[in-house]
Image 1 (cartoon, rainbow, N blue to C red):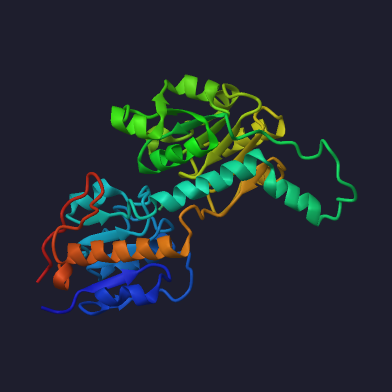
Image 2 (cartoon, rainbow, N blue to C red; image 1 turned 90 degrees about the vertical axis):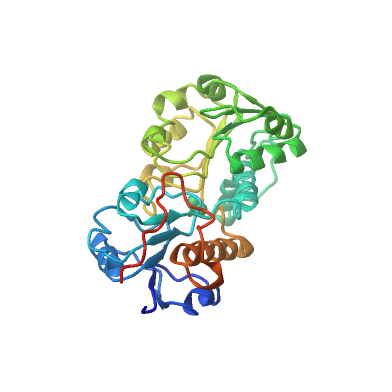
Length: 334
Ligand code: GLV
């Protein structure tokens, strides 16, 4: 049997690809690339597996001619860039990288929350502008984090890790999730389930960590923003599209909420121009999992998933991180 072929869609940590190279021919991408749908379809046409990132949309059209494709390993926990049903329909397995990024992402939620509540980036911009000529008592006042109510929308692994950290700030934690998490998890997180409307009304700082899907599209829209406290802050590190960015820009400009910390955007890397114009928003370029160790761990896990799915070397077997709804990989074509 000939060696399997693998496409790696973006530059990743090359040394971590060694387990794939040992058993397969690996085509890498030298520079960060924005692949068009046609380029993705071409790249997938003759390969058995692919290592992709959230930049690449892999759907039925992308794989229509991919007769040999058996597995797509996403380097990321969110996998809304994969049409899992379309892949499953033709026996292509889909995997993601949960767990390895949970704690790093939770750390970053707090970085955004604190920066937003205490106006850190706005203060730095002001200082760098040369406007600081005298210390003043009432300049750049923000909201307290300690003792406040933390709201979490989406109580999966990352939501729970964020909640656990809230104890250090002596916060009250409320969350909303489609289903309540077990009592023991609620106790460990010191968190209480509340209906969505109560979450909006009670949170001083609201963090979004739910997966993006048709049902979470614009869950934070103008009406949801209007239901929040005018002193509240909003943090989104899940996916663009969960928040209606245009409604958020309007609410921020009108002072309907106090501030927002955003790591993800609708249509990123393009950021809504009205958000760029707001002072009371902290903007970061989708870096919540971007620590050295975690980004390497994500690639290593995606490599292990792909090796298992393609039956390469000692890693052959069921991929550990098949996403819900994924098929097992079809047999290699002769
Ligand atoms: C990053 O956004 C991820 O889903 O891992």
